[in-house]
Image (cartoon, rainbow, N blue to C red; front, side):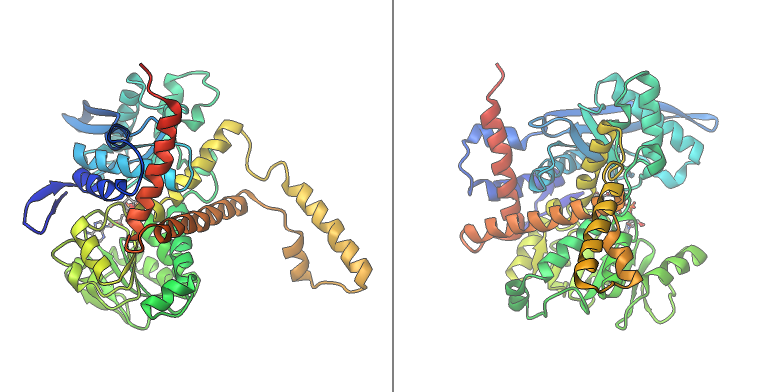
Length: 476
Ligand code: NAD
């Protein structure tokens, strides 16, 4: 998708990422050559392969881009969409590099895409396309636990990841770490508990941290905390649904939802669970009882709210609609939902824009945990859950003996509970999102005070990647 600047000239998504990079690079100390090396895509693989669809043979176009090899393996999702093109995959791969650096996940950035509309194919045909894509990646050494580890993205999920790991394992018999060649797998196939909801949960943790920062809320004239804040979410897919669900569960009011078929708005709030049931029953979010339909889905973004979460596609807030956005906080659930022009307009208005490369990093963070689990071949919590429970039991017994008082049964269950895998994953994700937010905020405050959060996040990422390149030196 293209952006348009103030003069009406067009430039690409990748160029947009480069522009944001350049804006931040001037706050770093690296020489031009290092900055250039950080910015470019290291390997771009465009492929075409035939797949039998019914009685015909279709030639499918697909990509895998490895943006940075400063840390290996590379990491990034695979999307299925008719909008997939080289520039888009390059831009998304670059964002992955910066994202991993920001949340201290030791991977280089990558991204993949197949230019198809998955809705046009049967499950059997989709499986064929996915397996063929995976085998093309194997042939060119573009996938592997220490090389490049894909994950789900727009239009793909755990099912596709299973097909890919199975294809990889079949082509690499006996490779003991084969499960670590991809993340976002079903739990039964080496996935980690908490991965499905990780990106949406990370979006929630990140925005919650913003809302808990009293100084920032004061500037916006909003009370501290997410409770009672009005939220609009665009895209009720993996990221959008889970983000909406966690906001809803924590007392925010979901006033609007936008999907491709249109939008709905309800000042009193939308019960997200009932909306999902309604969509299952009717095939659409429209006509939800108590809510008003919005025919043009994009108009939903312009309705009154405190927090706006675009969680569908890139460039949905751009020079043409940015001035009409009413939200005071925009949390970028999707990758690149704001064009650089929109970014500028909304920053001038004082809107807090929580950038994608931090905010939607929950997915890659938990993918990192899944990769670690696959390499260690043991479920998180398996070794220490019982130990913790026994330990907690003896501490509680000592306290009860010393005080002569007993806790209630409910308190006992809570206090004795040893961590399950999902507890540890949520805790690791929460810690990452909170810690990284404060790293970015500190970077923002230490710069000249006029720098926005995206530029601060970029600066932080460039500094971390720059150190890597400097320390590694240049291979002759
Ligand atoms: P998804 O396919 O599960 O969901 C996307 C949703 O957006 C779908 O429900 C779709 O119907 C809806 N949609 C499509 N066009 C729309 C439009 N014009 N208006 C409103 N809704 C529309 O995809 P996802 O995994 O949730 O990814 C969404 C975004 O988040 C993408 O930008 C992706 O790159 C980014 N992201 C995803 C992950 C992840 O773990 N899944 C991680 C990081 C970033």
